[in-house]
Amino acid sequence: MKLTLLLLLLFLVTPFAEGDTADNSIPISPWLRRGRTPAPRRQGCWFRPWICCERQRPLERRLCCSNRCIDVGSNADNCGLCGIRCPFRWRCCNGLCVDIMWNPAHCGSCDNRCSLGSRCLFGLCGYAEPVSTTPPLLHFLSPACPPPPVHPGATA
Image (cartoon, rainbow, N blue to C red; front, side, top):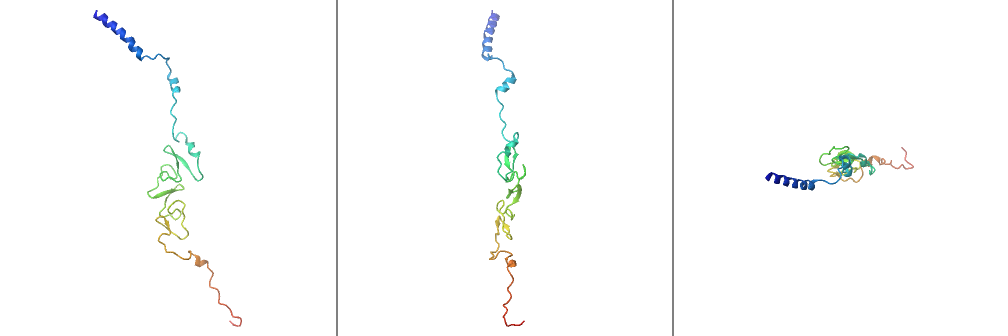
């Protein structure tokens, strides 16, 4: 009797347990299931490097560095090429690392040229130089002293 009751109880519980977890829909193949959920779009430029060249300004050179479009002409962490880092206090000017504190062609900032004869010190053109009233090399360009006037009756 106990065995019959136990078997009857087992048969009654089994269909309810299976009915709760069973999926009544038509089974879908894994190939179709992949097509239903779109794959996430890959972000960045590693898989699409041409996007770095789309919106370039003149004199700008962009490359895909660490999955980001970087202007390697002015970025101090990627100067000229990806991964080339400029030293402390230096700047990336036109793809080259430059010390803007002492370079007369890039004094204080990129492409800031000091005038001829002026030095670049601490990022300033002509810092602590004496003030001259005439530009340098001007005395070489001025004419020599004029000859003394000749008197009409004087003999040489």
